[in-house]
Structure formats: C-alpha cells, structure tokens
Amino acid sequence: MLRGSMVALVTPFKNGVVDEAALAELVEFQIINGTNVICPCGTTGESATLSFEEHERVVEIVIRAAAGRVPVMAGTGSNNTDEAIRLTRHAQKAGADACLLITPYYNRPTQEGLYLHFKKIAEQVDIPLVLYNVPSRTGVNMLPETVERLAQIKNIVGIKEASGMLSQISEIVRRCGSEFSVLSGDDVNTLPLMAVGGKGVISVTANIAPRDIAAMVHAAQNGQYDEARRLHLHLLPLHDAMFLQTNPIPVKTALGLMGKISPELRLPLSPMPEELIQKLRSVLRQYALVE
Image 1 (tube, one colour):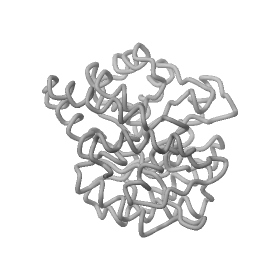
Image 2 (cartoon, helix red, strand yellow):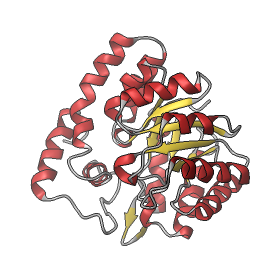
Image 3 (spheres, one colour):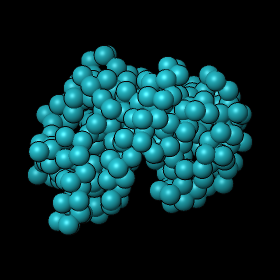
C-alpha cells in the first residue's frame, strides 16, 4: 500500500532546460529527510510544460537517483487518454513503482467519461495507479461513486484527493475501504484526512521541509495525535506561504532562496514580485530554512 509522506517534486530548470544534477540532488535531499515516496512530473513538477522527451527523462532520472531506496510514483496523466497510456507505459518500463493520473483537464468529461478514461489506462498497463482529483485545476470533480467503481479495478490502488471537501473525502474512505489509499493533495488537509482514514499526503511543502512533513504524517500514522496536531499547527504558515501565488511559483522561489535550485519557471508561469519574495523569505526565516 502507498502511504506516508510523499513529495510532489518540483522540476528544476536552468537556462531553459531540465537541470538534471539539481533534480538528482533534490531526490537525495528528500530521502535523507524521511520522505517515503517521490512523485515527479505532477502539477508541482510543471508537467504541462514538459515535452514528452523531457517528461520521460525526468522520470528516468528520479528513478535512478532513488535507486530503490524509496518508491517512485510518476505523474503520467493527460487530458488525452492515449497520451496518458504512452506516459504510463514508459514509467512502468523505466522502473516506476506506481503512476499518478490526474483527471482530464479542459475536456470536462462526464463521470462515465472519467471512469472509461481510467479504466482504459488500467487495462493497458500492469502497474499500481493512483487517481488524482483536483477540480480547481481541471474543471471537473470526480465523485465518490466514480472512485468506488474505479477502486474495483485491480491495479487502481488509491487517489490523491485535492477537492478540499472533507465530506467528499470521508465518503471515498467509507466507500472504498481500508485497502484503498486515500491521500491528501492539500497540505493543510493532511491531518484531518488522516483522522478519517487517509493514508498520507502528496505534499508541496515537503519540497522545502520534508523532515517536518514526515514527522507529522508518521505521528498521525502511529496514533500520536497530540504531536501530529502540534506539527500541523506549527506548519500552517509555511503551507500558506506555498500558495502566495499559483503553485509551484512559491515553492520553486523558496528552493531558490534556500540555494537548492535556480528558481526558474516556464511560461506561462512567471517569477514572484519582489514584495511577495520578501514575504516568503520572512516565513522561511521563521522555520530556519534561510538566514
């Protein structure tokens, strides 16, 4: 079962191309700080602006850098079913342990269309698949009854839920049972989600504070809810800072301020204005992430 503290890994760029050395170093930073699963090429990884060749290369680099020490869950979703199958097949061949599949964006499929999309992908590969529901990004919300139908397919093993609706998330847990991994897609909702049976988080904040995110998740897993609550409340200002602008602008800026990567983004994303950078820097100082 996929569970624990997972990172929605950024994709570092330098002079317009993927910074492969920095990417490998980010993987190492995550592993030594307790992250349980590495998730490249998701929304935070700017997958929408990666070419097929870049996408596949990033997945390969992360798998090689992880070297079997932690699982790699590669983002392979698309609003084109055939493209998603291509990326998922590649990830399986490259040695990924699982794949993360976002609901098709822009098309706005019906619930039946969502079911058929994921069913077709699952039939074309032999690798664990995790669904990803983020209506604010895609324009479509995958309902609990659709998730329940998909959970009957053998290699669909979980969902990253970023709807922000705890009632919906609770209903998915109720319908799909304890063997289905319901994962938080919003850092601020990780602890509430785990309290109703969720298995962990695919975190943005873990890019910069992996040890703290792992500590909170592991405390909740072990039933140490006083400690988990303390860490949850401690981390709230940092979570908020990661959304001063559209993700991943703040987290890449933060990693740049920390000296981990060049904070380069791809258009149409643009750099943070100076006043927000100063606000971000102030929050990072509170957590001793920058001087």
